[in-house]
Amino acid sequence: MPAFERLPTHEDCIAHLEAVRWPDGTPICPYCGSKNTAPNEKRHRCYDCRTGFSVTVGTIFHRTHLPLQKWFLAISLTLNAKKGLSALQLSREIQVNKNTGSRVATQIRKAMTQADHRDLLARVVEMDETNVGGKPRKGTKASNPDGRHPRGPGTK
Ligand SMILES: [Zn+2]
Image (cartoon, protein in one colour):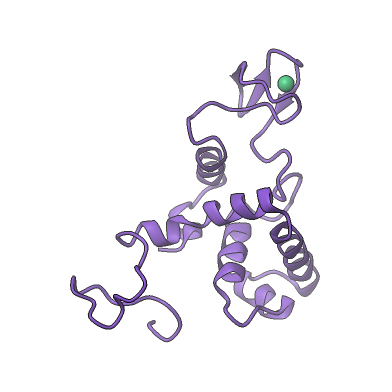
């Protein structure tokens, strides 16, 4: 199931992003790197530099008006598009206007050129694979011993 359908609300998306970004469950201050933080309403507060922060600080999701569900879907589509995805196609898929789609496409493409961003985005949408019984292994497509259907283009 696509990530965006499993995360129906903004809060779900934030929780997912936090789990991906801070796998050990400890928020890390994006400003000073401290783990000495406490929850502060829907955000976090750093005791060391005394700054409030949310999980989106330093990611492409920061200060965006686009719902995170659409971001996650856009990332998933971009990562899975073997022949690339035009901004127009992306706009249609995530149901936004052309300008927004084009901005999202640019942001994602830019993020993909930076290792830490690319890693985060890949892990954000990784659940697409892990929730259908683990990542498909190379070379098992033809035999498919456990009866699962191969995923990918043309298997709708
Ligand atoms: Zn700090």
